[in-house]
Every structure is written in structure tokens, then in C-alpha cells.
Image 1 (cartoon, helix red, strand yellow):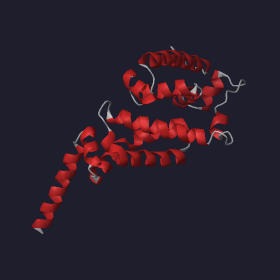
Image 2: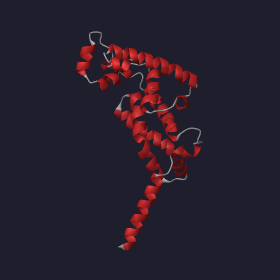
Image 3: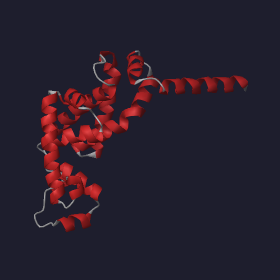
Length: 203
């Protein structure tokens, strides 16, 4: 019985130690075939990656499938990570590539019902919009009306808290372009929010 307790205690200590390990060290272990490290990295980042992909593909089932593909790629290519960016930035780069590829593959399909609901209705007044949903829902709807490039910038900076440098690494564009897109994205979003009657966010 004491041996079992000792083994369980040792296993618990190993898990705690692994959880305290940095993402970079986890990737090194994953490159050596360590499944526990892979599990911990997945637990740390799968929700973030899922939400990021979902905002691009707008389909939960597709997003779930793509998350699996992202982490399968991580398992296969962990040894290729060179540490030039944060691991989370690298993960989102992989996720973005997967999501855009999936979008290109389905671009000839019928327009999604969610897209239909997001087409502006000129008959709506700001009061109607506020009555239909709460401010958070209006904000999400306004973000959804941005161009794909502007929506992506807002998504990375505000939802994923990425810096201008990290956004540039993920998308593959210069930092100056990131700043320009951010300026116009915020301006467009402010106009959309003001039109929806949410002046406090539009300022």
C-alpha cells in the first residue's frame, strides 16, 4: 500500500512539474516524443486556438476538426520550432493557415445562414438593435461586419492580446501594415457601433 501511495505521489509531482514547464520546454519534450508534454500543451492552448479558428471559419464542427489538425502538426513538427516567437504565436500561425485553407475549400458552397443574419438591415433602428440583443452581442455583430483583414487584426489584438510584432508574425505582414490596418479597423468598428447606437464603445 505504501508503495502505491509513493508511486501516486511521484506521478502527481511529475504532473505538477510538467505543468510548471514553459511552452518552449514542452515543445522540446514533444519533439522527443513525450506524450505528457503534448497533453499539457494541448490543455493550455486548445481553447484559445479553437476560438481563434472559430472567428475565421464560423462553424463549430469545422473549428473542432481544425484544432485537431493544428495539434497533430505540432506533434509532427515540434522539432522545427526555432523560438523566434512565442509558442502561442506559432500555434496561431498554424491555426490561421489551416482556417484559411478550409475557407478556400468551401468558398463555392452556399452562403452560411450566420452570414445572412449579419447582412445589415436598413430598416433597423439603433433602438431595435439594442432591444434585440445586449451590447456584447452588438459588438460581436459589428466586428463580424468588418472586412476579413480588419476582423483578423481586431481578433488577434483584442481577443488574443497579441502585440503588433506578433500579429505581423502570425499574418506575415510588416508591422507598419499591421498598424495601418488596426487604424482603419478601429475607425470602421467605431462607425458601425455608432450606427448601432452604442456610442460609448464608438468613441
